Image 1: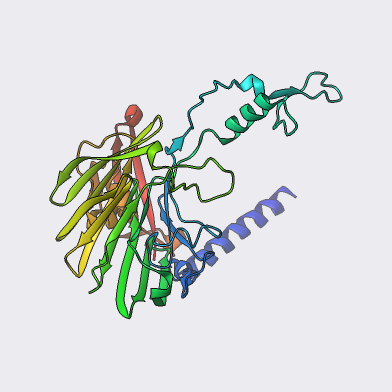
Image 2 (image 1 turned 180 degrees about the vertical axis):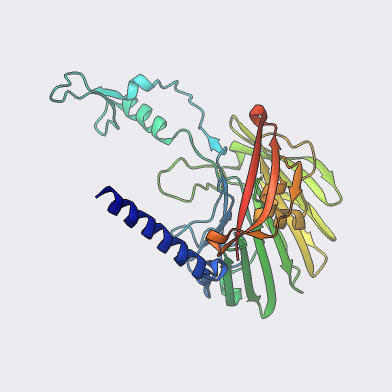
Length: 355
């Protein structure tokens, strides 16, 4: 019986190896055939680029041009895992004020946080404050300035899920506009390439949070509650300090070609290009950056698999164009000896690349 079981296991393994050896999977085609395609402005058709810790959700223009239009659908936003905010606790609410005793069978003293819909008033307000705080912080809206939905026609937008790039093409008042949007693979940086004879300006707006449970997290009528300060201005780069109550973060804006950045409101900026084709990057930082952020091409590279490896403490890269016979549909594309300073461990990464 034991020999029979062993024979069946060996036979199953051999069949699996044979199947793997004879089956070549076109993984790029498998992914690309599911690329989302948008042909109209629809509040439920927003698309997102990101890196797992940062996300930028765009509309049909490839940027966040129409946040009000998308507000009731899949709203546009810019979020990072470190981006949190709390409203000032002016009434000094305590967590104990949100608790209530709810005895259950076997648990005579079950203490739970509740909403107090019928009062007392202070307990209800305390529960509401702790419900709303802390909350995710919308870091900034980046979109073409002063465009109307009715001016946008012939939309052709595709999210390339293999490369992590959002390709958008449309007509603005019959003038063609092409936008490629991507996100840095390691940092909270949005990059965009714009090509158009229209030379459309890009507006960067910063909202105040709402604290609501189900909205787009933007209040555009509370400019006095937060501030936007340009603390560094260079010919192709600017550094912004954002202060939202006790939360402080930084925004770096850089661009190629000739463009002018100006502050058009307390929490509004405008980047006006002079070239038909140009690129820009907007990076968000928890702490003030000490070196300039990568340019557009470097950000595109970082979104690829090789870019991820290069950006994470590399010491030696060895290309090994060899195959593993058992898994013929995989090849060893790159062997990276990565001596990582974190925890002082030596780590060898073997990257399997589909062929």
